[in-house]
Image (cartoon, rainbow, N blue to C red; front, side):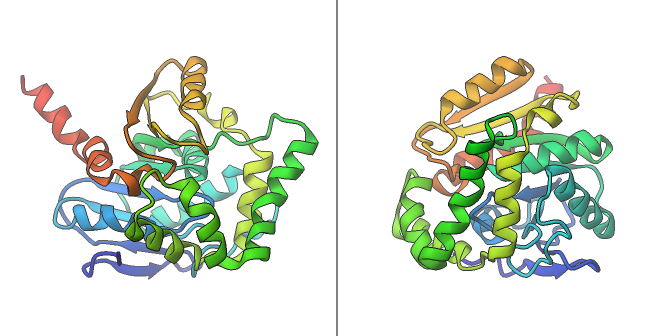
Length: 275
């Protein structure tokens, strides 16, 4: 499924590529993809929100056509600074920040550092990071995914990993995963793997003062429901929402429900304030 024909790929002065549907109405949503993905995997959301809300989805540094970070050993704060440059250049007003998987770690870092930009924070299938685990576990996490990419290539990795990422491994969904993984670049993949292995979402969530919405797939084996529930025990202000019949890529598996929970939120708030 290609992105909406009304959307355009843009590039910032510093070399970050992102999709922008250019809508002039509705609210603004900035979408951050996960470690094995890219902007194109948000295609169903771009299709559903045409004529409704403005969506911006980046290819994270080192992904797709985006320039890599200067550091090969980044923290989530490095990605947050890169996103801030994009946000400022695009002249975005306060927006809803949506981060999926490793993008949730990046989104948390952004919201903790630039709270004035984020009117609402939505995290999905949260990758919490391994920064507080043993050095050996960190090494294993850091090496695992790049090694797979080198051994299998993007298409082989999609066939190997796709069924584990999806709750609904339909031909259409598998094709979307394959197309996204074709745009993976080893340099960016290694940097994001370092982030996953060595950083921790706890370093950022503790600084966020507002509510945090967390969506998770009921059938997610990558970031299981138990992990999301444990996270809420540490941060009671989190609002958890399970998405049934969905795996890790819940926004691909169950786009209609995901869209309702994310994009219809403002309408629901307005309705409640009027009653």
